[in-house]
Length: 474
Ligand code: ARE
Image 1: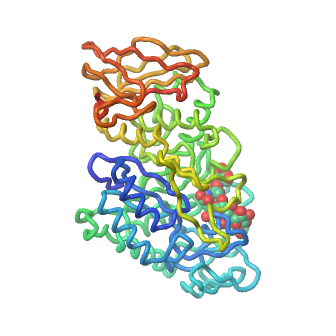
Image 2: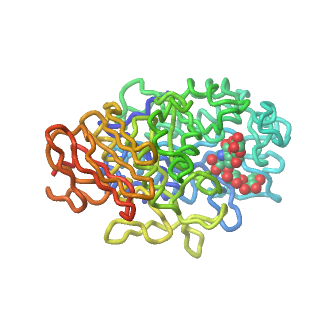
């Protein structure tokens, strides 16, 4: 279940973290569809516990499978899926199959009004009761299989996925979403569930809904969150044949390289050459909603210059099933999404350039990022060719004869003739500007008959890269 069922030549998923369903529907029609995005990963859709201050992570603590959260209700969810599918943008849901909520003093009331007593493992809204959970224990050793798979991840009540009842409720929930037209699922905390149990569940799911434009017999796309830095007891390899797996080493290493801890020349063998999963099994990202909050090598929107360079490389190099992050501004781990005085999530607002202004970061609306989604679509099905580097952190390469990327992560200018592999003509650099009504608002490059063009990326330029492709020929 590795096929994401993208439409036409599209190929990038954007994670609209904590967005409301009605805003996503709007975004599909007004921005994502026209810009060629392939899909959206949405925040968890089922009822969750209400935590004081409304941190984003309350949504990782389910109470029932009713589709009411701060993002909207079932009707709004269904409307979003339909409208996004109509403009060729697929919806993938973040699903919590591993656990229910953590401890809560007394009776908790969820986002759909359902009561539960998590400390007694009592979730009448499903219903689940104590017998549906293994005995409680804590994970203290992340390399102990029993603990990782049978104990409680950060105290979240751990469901027993080997039980027929638990399986049937999870399958019913996922089938309900398939019926509403989703294309697949991000499986949260997959490492904490036995792969045999997941295999049973995935195999039992319905085919995608043909009323939403999917072909007959299309299986839901599955991408599993397995954090494996390369030496885990429960490894990514146990899951990769069931569906795609999040390749966390991609995120860590791309952060390292673009922070300057590793010369970019080494990226020539990026992908399987670095020990990553085969391309069709790897869900790739510069940052995700968890590791963007951790200190360390991973890049996030707070280092925009490096972040944009890393994203350009991510989307230009032919490796992986790409996902880009779209964040809200945060100070610490618990910062809630933009909300009003009644703690309702607010809608994003945009300035005249289309950038978000009210607490939403919307990396996907940064020109340098959405332009690279266009690049990736334009060069689809071509190979990487004509790698060049200066022996350090200036690099360039072609994608067949359809696209060219150059990056300068050294502290001096890149100025030279390079092989762009493109047919002769003038090309608009989609990083510094856009091609609008036949004229380029940024830098442009003249490619000669032999495919070479003069490339200049100054150390003081606003962005450290240049990207040319056949759909942006002046
Ligand atoms: C919150 C509170 C906790 C409290 C708990 C229960 O923060 O203090 O104990 O509630 O009341 C998210 C948040 C958590 C939050 C949780 C539930 O990040 O802070 O807990 O929601 O509300 C491991 C897992 C991996 C997991 C990460 C976070 O393997 O699956 O930890 N990631 C997913 C999601 C998270 C989400 C959950 C799972 C839970 O993406 O957003 O948590 O649904 C090494 C190991 C990794 C380990 C990692 C932890 O790298 O190899 O396996 O990841 O350390 O950093």
